[in-house]
Length: 313
Image (cartoon, rainbow, N blue to C red; front, side, top):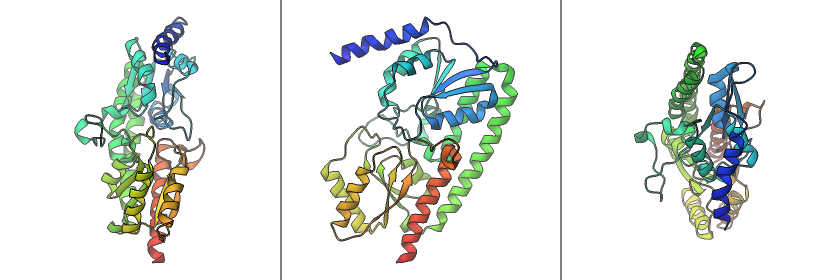
């Protein structure tokens, strides 16, 4: 019955929102768009500049895997000129709404799906699906820029020069950020680059920067970790003598705390090395409020925790 109500309700909400008129440009003459996550929103704002008004649906600390669109979200998306979302099933519970939006005369852009398929990581246990967390590889995330530029130029060709200029500047910034990240992780010996987190979001990070990555939950946080999952990962930590594990800002800390208790019960002391930004940026106005800032804070947190543990041995 709930499924039947949902099937009927979503198109009705979209149709009702559409009755308010076709999407229009902002009062200032700019482009009005909606972004699902603040990671995507930061990307679009950086390229769009003052010519684009970006409304973000999910704020800091929100888990996009579990997020459900409200009636207000549907109205916001229906009144926009374009919707930018991450894609690759990151916004799993919004898939139906986004699908309906795409059926209207409304541009929907899944930025992560602009990355070439041969550069994506296949999700373990999900044949044909890919890990959506592409932003953890800075060089890979930079490949989403062209899709944003193409969409904005199509909607607002008069400001093409500005979009291209900001895109070029951002590509240079991301290139420098990637180089810094690779240099910073060199502070850790290769055998110390083992990253254990709440959920398996850091696969691209591990591949790009030489870390072995283990997550307690799977690629999506929709699945709960069982006792056997905790025990197996605890055994791995003890065997490899991993000194620090990490919580995530968009995942409840209880998962990693339970893992820490299981490790300690085996007579091995593992610390919680800090909190990482995974599926969300930090608060606006803070260093972690931008994509570049979260990359820097994450790497500093990881390197500092593991390097300190290494020096203490």
